[in-house]
Image (cartoon, rainbow over all chains, first blue to last red; front, side, top):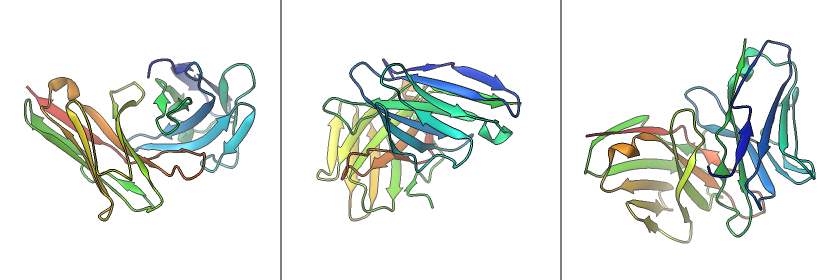
Length: 114
Length: 114
């Protein structure tokens, strides 16, 4: 976990509001993955990004969800018009260097939609 | 369609004994397997991994065994310690391309009793 930063750690939104989740990868890592964990479930892949590129968004819901990883700054997962079913823990992971297979996770953002 | 399965939701072991956590997968394209440990309200922490070209990998108290023909892997913890109590996730990836997205099982809650 060391080095991958996520904020906020907890986020409460009312239905219809927007949620923005941020992820700063480990120093030297340029690959970011986002996962979602619903209660009593494992983590599910959402999107894989490199700097300024979305590589694989096959796990993202088609509507309301978007992600970016700009040249400067953190990766952002954006959820528009949140619904109660979006309540979950959202984790990002980063890889880089020699060990692309080993992803290091952040502490997660727990989103609660009222 | 769950491609990675952890069929035991929970496991209870006495301190000092061996813990064996099991994982099955269905996708024969998976060629890299990882175990993560997760405490409540934290992100997953990488434990140990194994490539499909190997059948065993050892790191201290942790050993992972891979049986490709059975599409089965297991994590052995010897000796088990109370601090090992956590949820353990098995994950798999296909490293054939450059996308190392992970597919997770639902996890096994390990409780090590003093």
